[in-house]
Image (cartoon, rainbow, N blue to C red; front, side, top):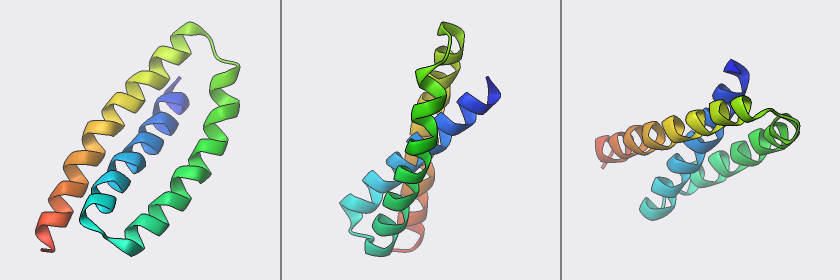
Length: 82
């Protein structure tokens, strides 16, 4: 279950980072993070499609944590470099 948590965390973290990069027009970040989102998504589809309910809860928890962490970190970095 740690693997499902981690992959969901990473994917949603990257999505949150990308949203901040999109709104702030950080073009290189948009391209790099967009690629990484797709890369992790391809791995997540196979893992979650055959999971149990408990594994799905772990996946969703990872996604929720990745969401807030990605937003906080990317907002901090954008503000740091402005």
